[in-house]
Length: 441
Image (cartoon, rainbow, N blue to C red):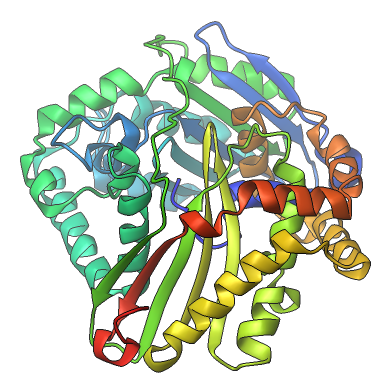
């Protein structure tokens, strides 16, 4: 998954702060005969059901020279099945007032459906159709390829997207992770309808799928409904293990010359996997460094005291077996070098001196206290439960999380800063006006 802002689904897990009961979760889990994992949480306040599916069919499975295939398959799921055209799918969704969306990342495809309880059978039938009977009509394939190509060109004009792409390319030079999920215009042209059908039939399988459900339904009801809807879905090959690509061992600087008034800058390197036991101490440390919004050291040093950047933050994005650390900011070209110097200084400072007691307390209070505000809808809860299952955190994870954060000490923060922040390995990506920035960056 690309490291977007700190409100990504992975980062959402950082903010768990209440017990399962106070969050209204009380999740239950079962595994169907075909390997599909079902996790539910019953919430009867509204007659609605939110469903989130995670399928191990992301861009890491793209065939060589067909980069972008996984993304195209995900986009085309709602554009025609054996029983319905794209128009009929949309008419069905409109008639019952449901919302259905799909997205693709490096490891996973996400399918989200929100529907009234009374229309659940209709919604599950539609889900079953798109996940087992999609046909990828040639005209829709062409249309989506053109749409993705336009998106790729648009991203080339967005300096933030360019900086992110260059960072990923540099961090993972020999891995599929270093290539964009959307592929390239060249790889898109090489993808045919048969490639998409092959990918779909190989990777869209129940034993690669997690279904999380939150809403006006019991676990037993949902289990029966899902089993009936997906009774003909057969197992395929299991998901591959975590990707752990090689990363650069030395610092590198990448410059992209563009006529911009603001330079977009990323400093970063390899992070940690979600399974790392230091994950919680790292989240507290990063909150103090640059993850805590206006209360972070990065904002105080670079924005408040120097006025160099309106936007500056850092985050650790964690996936299975791998992660990234990024320090991101935008500043005027003329002040880019000074902003980079200050960013490196803050990274070094948190490695050299214990954080203050008040800083630590504020960080832990925020991480423990912000969860209810972030899981305020059934859909967000369903997304959260799916992630908990994906990362194998256990259904009692919300009960344990506050203690994980509470027991982080100043010594822990210093230890993980020294262990996981590497000033000598920073990849520095600068997208801006080279003449105004200067040569040394």
